[in-house]
Image 1: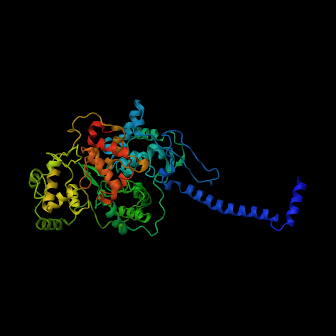
Image 2: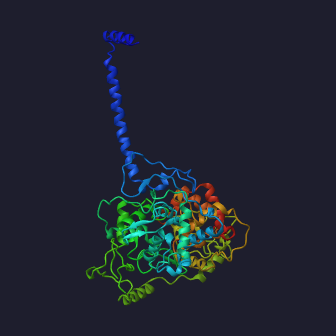
Image 3: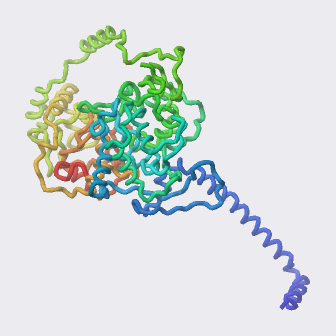
Length: 323
Length: 242
């Protein structure tokens, strides 16, 4: 066999049309081309992975995901080790409201959903403004990139800079009442908090615990080309937001209730709420506003509107306010 | 009250006090009164719903009586797909008449009628129909449940998997409209709602503010258009809060 090969090579060396070293050349060329394709491809895949939460979970989510079932997890084994929770490309789709079970637990879930969508009615005693949870957590707390409950539930207990301690999920919910709802925290174990926890747990069933799911919180928006500017923001606000939120930012009322929420002023979130961080607000606005046309504003416009919104007076932060 | 910018942890120092204090009565009320008075004097006389009622009954030169198509009480005509007008926001009705007159909104029936009406008459008619009783769940006739599943879900919850907000998110609880820009959908003949959604999809209707309705309609399938149009005809019958 090797003799045959050697003879063939020798014979080939003397023909004019072919030299055996060409084989080496072809192999080397193939390797170079393969490398040129593979290296950029792997770089692109890595970037995509790193910016998962901003990429819109709807796009990342295969449509066949079973509501509430164990999700398909495609973790990259070679991913760099991270501080804190891992980001996974997880196909998680929360169950539909029709799937809320019967019985006592189902009743708690249903109450939680009612509180969430109509906080003004179902948790009146703990609300100090005109908002409902669903104003910032769209689609009944289900929408990705709108701080969905199913992505928050599995992330607690967690340490929070906000109050310098480890918080339970229940405490996290209380924070919403205190700041975003400018009200007071329902007592631990109260039926309101239990209902909201039940609703969140029911929605998160099947999601992994302690991993940052794609679509959690508000997307981390790119830095704007120019520093955010309230004056520019005012112009975009009047063209894109005022239709529903009013030229004065005071929302639209129907029958004494806000059909569209006020963005500043006495009936809006207070100065301690997460939405007063323009990074959060810009991420929310870019992904979700105007309602039904999320993603149509430019990055710069979203930052400018967020700056403009948060340049107005609102109720003070209860941690620093003096009576 | 201090201006809180993006940093929620700041305890505002006195130097950062906001120059404007919106919760205290401003010293501008005198100006407001003056401006209001000037507006009242300069604006044409207020719209007259009684004149609008006469238009609705008898029509005007070049414009047949509104009620011939829109019903004796502005309830519309289900079979022909003529819309319900009763209880719609006045500003919405007026905008539609003006858009018909300018050709911004297309309709072989309504364009000549709107053009035949004067500015004043359009306002009167809009005022009249806005003053009529709106659709309400309590007053709605008990009907056999419509094919509620899909339609009810879209109306009350939307389908965010494809970026579709609930109809009622902008058209108000129970679809009764949000003055001034968002018309009532509930009680609207399904043929009308269906035709409008299709018109947005086709680009033959385009007078919605900010293209909001167009972007919603474009994401709907034919089946969804049918289901939601049927549901909205009488949401009271199909399980209002699924």
